[in-house]
Amino acid sequence: MSKIIYYIIYDLQFLISIITLYFSLVSIGNKFSPKYMRYFWLYPLVNIIVLIPHFCGTYFGLFISFTIALNNFSVIFHFSFLSFFIIRILPQKNEKKILIILYSIFLVFISFFIIKEPFNQGGPAFSISSLGLSIFCIFYYFQLFKNPPVLNLRKEPAFWIISGVFFAMCIHSPINAILLYLQNRLPYSYYILLLDLSIFSLSIMYLSFIKAILCTIQQKKV
Image (cartoon, rainbow, N blue to C red; front, side):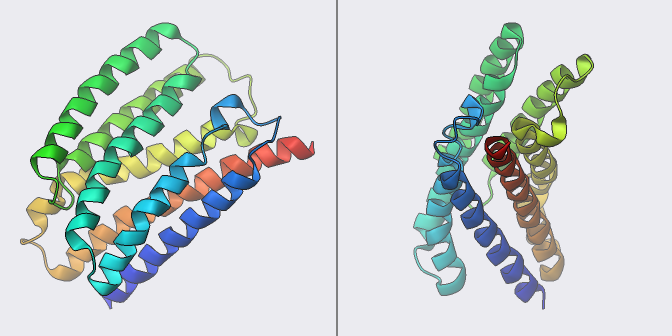
């Protein structure tokens, strides 16, 4: 039963990723869309490229080693893309410099663990990248609420994207930090439950991306 739930949640995340890519491509050329959204379609596209062999590995047992390595190295893109997305929308240059330094430090650790164990599923790189993105999101919230907001956050794409990232990464970071340790210490059903929670948090993140993209489309209609 736990395996069936895992497959359902996994398929749901794959479907939501495709929907996100579709809306991202539809919104290309919208002159009312913020500049920081111009190349956002790259993120769901890369995710789907990574998920396709992962899908084959999950259901058919194909390309297992290649899938694990690809998934591990994709963390570098995931962390870099979302980090610079957040850095770009921050108004304060001093905070941007701080985040670039933090980004460099986190990237060194992420790359080290990936290169050290490229075929190890769910290594420390996942937890480190999630922790780094959570910190970056906190910088954004601090800037946003330091002064009375002048934007309608319900219609602000950046707010929805960063909120989705923050929610998912706050769940991902602790789970990935303990997952390998608990793999042989928990009953299989509980271990799968942790995986389900991790994957489901990504689905919520992509739903927030869809909401952000719809905000840009609605701006075009207005």
